[in-house]
Image (cartoon, rainbow, N blue to C red; front, side):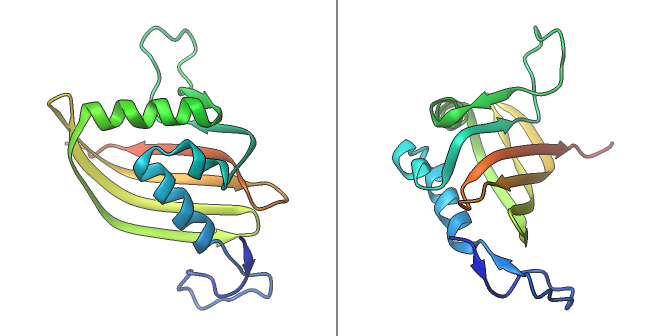
Length: 144
């Protein structure tokens, strides 16, 4: 799915090794939106991990909740579908490098009635087959 092509980087410094993972990421976002394990299987590689921005309060080493595989990712997305409401996404941007994708956006909504807002960075690592094997998620909460 990754192919040589025009990067979405608007810096004008196009590299000869530019890659284009738009098709891969469009398919990932579609699977994500619908929490669809079958669609994820087409874009996620063996050993997939999602390093989340949050961790359970009971975790003795609070380094972020790590989900392993499609089944755990789908369970988390289903939980969010039940608990998160009034979601708004803004300022979506995506950048590509060989075997690496960076997404940035802002999110706002409610989690079981409690409002939240954050600036988000998602980092995706791809394997040699251009399948996603790791997603690292970072949230920066507004100050004040």
